[in-house]
Amino acid sequence: MKGLEILRDRKLASALVRNIKLPGTEELVLMEVCGSHTTAVHRYGIPSLLPPGIKLVSGPGCPVCVTGIEYVDRAIGLAEDPDNIIVTYGDMIRVPGTHTNLENMRTEGADIRIISSPLESLDLAEKNRTKKIVFLAVGFETTAPGTAITIIQAADRKIDNFFIHCAHKIMPPALRALAEGDSVIDGLIAPGHVSAITGSSIYEFLPAEFSMGCVISGFEPVDILQSVSMLAAQKADNRPRVEIQYSRAVPPEGNVKAQKLMYEVFRTADQNWRGLGLIKASGLMLKDKYAMFDASGLPVKNKVISSEPGGCRCGDIMKGLIGPRECPLFGKVCSPSNPVGACMVSGEGACSAVYRYDTPVHHKS
Ligand code: SF4
Image (cartoon, rainbow, N blue to C red; front, side):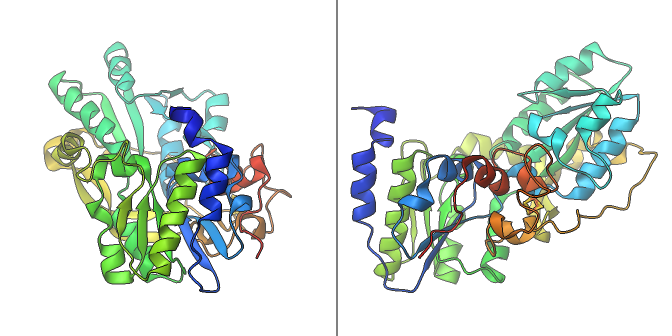
């Protein structure tokens, strides 16, 4: 057996589960903070494999889910202007704004294009000189370097009709907010993709200040189960620390080149996270040198007073306080074909993952 086969091997997975060292506390609550982990956890039915007493919860790791509603409303406002072409990753177009979403706007004639790389925006800008091309720049340290390269290239190619509507976020301040808040989290299954860029040192404050263990995990079932086992062992031994399970992709120092690119273009700024509120220095905004690419100065005709959808519990879900099935709207009025909140839109959202794979979110003790 090699590669993926090993990482999906049932016998190995069962052996890992058998060897999980239970810490002796009533319940061990572990949070994953990565949309890809959310999907993998539910796709592979990880909660049902775990021994009683270990609970997995999803945190604020799905980029679309954490993007604030006022950001979506402004994107919709920009799409209303026929002089603008909006370019975005696919998931964003179905995220509900206060009154509508970008998908409806597109049906009504707005020019909204789905792209897989922000660099595609630059060709579009060169081909449509009379239009303003606005890229919806969302996501964490994983996608921010790609936006940074695009900005640098836009400057090099002297493109003056390209802009970003920026809501990039960085993980450490949100983790600090969670650790300081109401959530009861014993350990963190840290995101593999973000960590491949940042390295492991960004998590050191969690064991040092909050006694919270942290394991950077891969995305296959064996990766996740091994990470759970490592976190349980940390708790049982009362030695919280940062460990890298996903060592095949995450060097301790991360991707230094990508980090440099990111901070060549961006500086940190306060940012609003859906459900978590305004978190100090948790976002990225363009440095003055690149401010000409900032879409925040572009006019929007119809200003909307943003408000979250009534009854939606996305915020509590992303803090790990409740599971999706505890939202009264789950599966009744809210489903992937009719999402009320952002967590039901993207395949990486906790509500969507639980709905699609029909998993109990919390292991039944
Ligand atoms: Fe929001 Fe729907 Fe999830 Fe409830 S089920 S928290 S309404 S996204």
